[in-house]
Image (cartoon, rainbow, N blue to C red; front, side, top):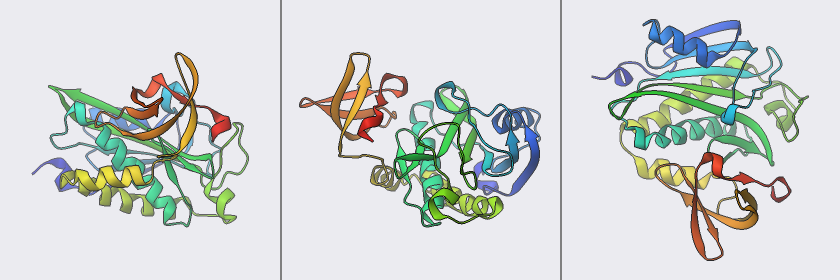
Length: 252
């Protein structure tokens, strides 16, 4: 029996007042043998939180959900690591949906509501021999913060007008994580793929994008197994990796 089958996600929750990064903290404790699959690190404040593409994650202390989930995927190849992105993206969007928020996944794993970012995900994997040995899944959800230094951000309170306890949201998220991670363990890739596309932001809609050659119009046609975004452009399908394309804001 693998570690991912012994322990459910959330079997242990470590709460911190302040930390540089929950991902850094979790990675250090995991290397020391002090954390196992399913452990959750939750912090009131991160003073060096990180997002995708090296961006800094801004969050006011005590107002948001800042956490890392430790996973030890069973026999998941590096080439299939985007399945973890699907699991976590579906879990975060699902938790927000259960609060009455129409959340969508902006490729690859930002969570959007009403054209504004409400949550972000940073997955850092350790691998060997072509397999992922463990993952530190960083999740940041804007819960009760309503003032942001960056444009186009929102929160649970901003969307619902109501204060939400972070721990209540955490338990909803843990429930979603266990549900979708079980789909991965069951090898139910069809459900993961279909629901990821079902929640994909701007899927099958014309939008404006920018690549190395400039700004263009296209339609998001899907996502490859590798995680590359498929854009239909001028009658052809183009394949884009994470740093090769960006959404142009005036199209959102």
